[in-house]
Length: 183
Image (cartoon, rainbow, N blue to C red; front, top):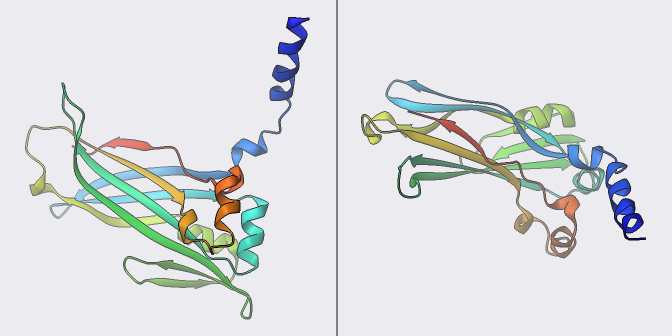
């Protein structure tokens, strides 16, 4: 009797479609290099939005993505000390009249108008030569790491949509935290 109660949840878990886990935000490539005394970041992010989010985008809802980048000094006996933290704010929107997509970097003001969603997601997912930190700010002989995460900013959604987004797992999109060694 007890074994049959345990068997049902296990069987249900095994037959949940894997597509439920495959949607979200994922870093495909991440690299920092020292150029001219400054560490630069290059990254490639894959966005796999679910149908509910894509439908909202098609109906004029702007999506804001926050990319959080931290630089930390590695310590043996204490928690790693945060040296810097930056947030790159990106916005993806669709203009219904022109049927074009607009990707904006809210930090720099750069904007790209694109014809297809795939093109827009490629631009949204490309970080190139982002200035992380000056090499002079890092002490010689110490180890430093970076970590990065991207997430859909629910607070930037229109107020009527926020309660739905907070209550639904479909809107809780964020990448796993990725770490890499800087120096």
